[in-house]
Length: 399
Image 1 (tube, helix red, strand yellow):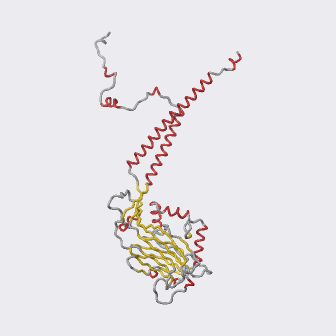
Image 2 (cartoon, rainbow, N blue to C red):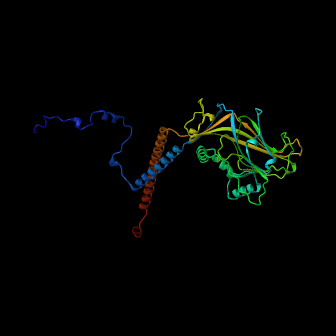
Image 3 (cartoon, rainbow, N blue to C red):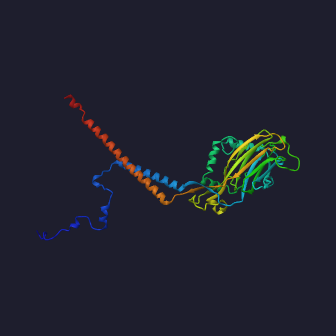
């Protein structure tokens, strides 16, 4: 047969080629479907586009969440050694400045004549009352009436607990100045006193007293007339630590009014040193947590140190005696803990794992739903065809 029988066939040309690729095919655990066994449909194409859009939306959501990060709250004993603490005060008392006395006395025994260190400005209570009315009528949640809960104000205070909001407010209030007093009209009587400014004190428990001349502390000279007492007051700001005017503290924008001369307001504050940071991940178990006193101006863009406080108030009418001191009394306690609110971001590897999980989960679930839907449509179609074949047509019925 033309020498064909003498030749031999190369069996290797008809089988799988030798080599590493051929050996790896033995371990392929993923089943393959031949193209001749598959068919494309318009519904399958539409479902594929829907799954692709869904994967894109969920992936973008994961990327945005990763970029924003998440907040963690770490509590620890304050390890830093700090001796002084700044106190910021801006209060209006409905009494003349000559009759108002402000003093600070702490647990160390130091007595600070705060009235000599803070700035006093004669003003009119009617002008400040107009400002409060204007703000509240405009829907602003800033001002609150003492002993009345304001839901909008609580929501605004809640925003000051987030790192991004706090750092943004601090950047917008770099001047750290106290606001200007409202303009007085000709008909406004100068019957009040605005006391504002910052002073340094010991970082220990202390008391700040706003009383009348000759009451509460020994003072040479004639005491103020008790019938002129009026401790109606407006606290524009009361904060501890660096002065951040845009942050809203619990007593900021608080109005308390009374028509009784001998009246006593008491505020009990629990001050907690707090650090807001975007510097990165913080392990609460590590030994070197951020020290509030070590934060420099260079770090202020990502980390700030401040103090939060919770407050409870009590007010009462007291008997008109010379030894009874009416006024406004602040008692503050420095808590021995440090709160660190950090905004952290997961690693790129964790982001990649989440993206793979999202996309694979959507693809697998989408495949199952498509198969179940195709099977249901096919089953309903078969049932309809069987029912239509079992019915007699009009031609057969006449026969």
